[in-house]
Amino acid sequence: MSHRKYIVFLILITVLFASLSLSLPKVELRNVREVVEYPLPALPEIAVWNGELIVKAKASQSAKDWKAWLVSKHGTYSLELTSSEYSEEMWILTFKVPSGIPPILYDLKISFSDNGEREYVQPRSVSILKEWPEKLKIGHLTDIHFPGGAQIYARCVYELNLIRPHLVVATGDVVDVDTIKSAWVYNFFLSRYWKVPFYSIPGNHDHAGDDAANYQKFAGPLYWYTRIGPYLVIAFDTAADGYVTKEQLEWAEKILSQNPDTVKIMAFHHPIFNYPGGEIEVDLENIEKVKHKMYSSWAEHLEEASILVRMIANYDVRLILSGHIHSDTVVVMNGRHYFLIKEPSGGSVREGSHYPSYRIVYVSKTGEVEPIMYQGRDLFEYPNSLPVGNILYYYTPANDGSSSAISLRVDSGLKTEIPIVAEFKVKAGEEYKIYGVEDYEVESYEVEGGVLYLVKTTIPVDGKIRMTLAAADDNSPPKVEAIELDEESKRFVIKTSDEGWGVADVTVEISVNGGEWKKVDAVPLVLIDRDEGIVDVYEKPEFAVEVPGTGTIKLRVKAVDFAGNVGEEVVKSFKLGEEKPEEKPEEGVEKPPPELPTETILIAVLAVLLVVLAVLVVKRRRS
Image (spheres, rainbow, N blue to C red):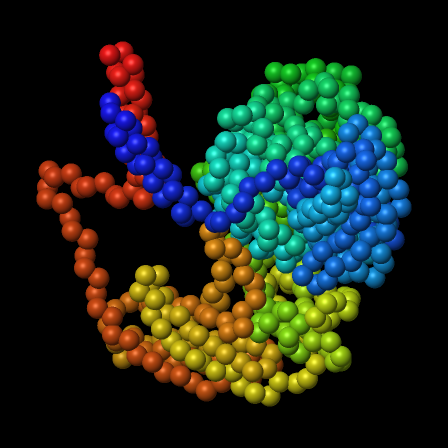
């Protein structure tokens, strides 16, 4: 094979790789542990006002002049260095957290001198609380399986940002195969939208391809622990074989013995107990009796399983989070140890009534465990975790300190009460009042570019919140700016505007071919897209209505704002022809298969070209 032909093949392969990467978000993958070993984006530090913040940084022993800041879009806050120690080629730095700063998620910025001035930012790695919570509110994800689960994960981020748990824990199978670049691209891109601290541990899929080498570079250590005031969280790596090694168990025993006066929580990918769960009485002297109730990988390693079960009982671990089996399962061991296993949060969904989900569970300072159940279902009535895609919300008209009024619309189909935290950033120097909700708690903080209000309230069972924070009344009606047909999605899109509190809804009536007018629901359009990102603020909200059929279709539309003002009615007609019926193949003639996605075709072509190239290279060497 000539040199020129080799070059042609290389160019073709390069073009194909470039084509495949065009559809991915533009994100630079980086080793998150290169400078700061702790905290990490997937292993953050949670601290309180006037408390300590621990930072572990890699630098030479001669490094000096350590400084640190908490950085967010609302401002930058400097931290006071109280101690520094060099040990095992790492600096362990202790900083004091100032009081009065907003209790939100921050980037950590550090600077130091080490053969020159150095600066480093660790994104989304520090979460600040006013004080340690009486009840720790945990969001539970599992089995995301990037890149395939990216869209579901995006939706989880969007919804959990409103629910605002104190932390989110993902119990393994973050990626489908650890060596797939697009998996980590989507992880980096979508995780930048978190407003709550996100923790992850590996599953067997995270070990696939390179035994979790990329996981350790792009996420964090394989197992870890963190102390959140009175709560202790220990996370294990069950790796590819599906159990916890004795080395990790000895490490955990030491951690547990050093933190006796804590409420203990554990997390690992492969569950000890299998579906269908239920209440299980375990004789700690004869754990083999419940071997038949164990997941297979643990049953095959009964010695390690026995050590862990005894550890859970002896140290009174109250909550154990797992995944792997892609199914909701709850086990209550000996009446006090809660094992919660969950549906996937992006991975494949089992047939039947299963769905992608997340879970919200509270753990109190006294050890009580209280999960929020979908539609108020029983602890052992499956599935009972919260299905993704049932909460929709948006802020309007702005949320950046430029407005004297911000409104929030929330719609939930979960049919259970869901506590949330709304975040409003308004102009400084004005008196504000909350409208639309009666039961709430509010905090305010003067920040860069305005005042930040954090409002705690609850989505009621009927699922609707229309809330406004405003400095003045709103008497100006909203407008319907346009009604357009989106032929691709087969929906009418209604564009609105308002000079006051913002548009809350539109009322829509439709008449088909001169028939009676029927009221239809309009759905707010929000951007939650694995490739484009997540947007929750809209200056001019848009709404969509499904096209009801063909012929002459008339719409009567009015916009309604959050103050209850109703705009002028707008009427618009559309003439829609019937779609061409699908051509049926002649009898005995096979119907052509559906077209494959472009990305799949490109991958297939690339694989064929690589095979051809390999064959040609082998032939050339033999000749």
